[in-house]
Length: 340
Image (cartoon, rainbow, N blue to C red; front, side, top):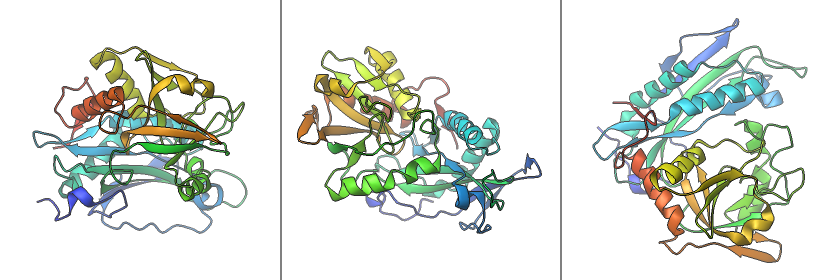
């Protein structure tokens, strides 16, 4: 029995559900893990996560498909990305198969919280890991905790699909050869001041440029960029400090294999913005959100949003990928993990 919620107006915010998964790493090995009811975590004040930000996380969604099944979109790629994050942050790697199993178990234990088909909502899934044993000197915690919780959510940006207004940030998102390509909590902490400032100035998000030269487009605080050139080529920025978005990678497959479009993953000089007809932000939370304008000082760059608040190509990409996720369009092999 589905929970009695106003599914179409729940917003994008944490709402605790019935169960979550937890597994502990002690004495050099992971335990079997278990489903628990308690959403609270009690650990030492000197835990590695508190002292030296030793934490990483993932994000994905579960959906109710058109034929009534509950599915998760490409959790195996989230598992692989978390493995990379753990290695970079000196956290113990949680095995891929166990990761996917933990995600499936958590969704299955909270099926009543999965929004119904057609509501525009989904079940957000948040796996994360922390170093929890006490540290004082600068060192990695020896013990770790892996958890998965879920929360029903609506659209990431208030007002649903609408053209976003971005500013070119004066701050850098990630250092060259730093942690920009892993999903470390510290990357997001540094972006909080910048996003608060952008919101105060009536912008929806920031566009970050590469920190080495500040001449190339990288990403926003929480999403990758996708551009469409005036000749219809789909372009995404390539950089060693960009987080490898699973949604962005999926959209590029959709663009090439489903829509027959020319695709390029390459460096995107900021100077090319006037040549871009469309722009979108892609990530788990929003799938793809249209960008209407980017402001850099006294200059504004605008993009086509004529197809019902999206550019025509961005809309096709959005409708095709969400169609795959919702079961309206056949998915490539391995993309859909069925829960029920």
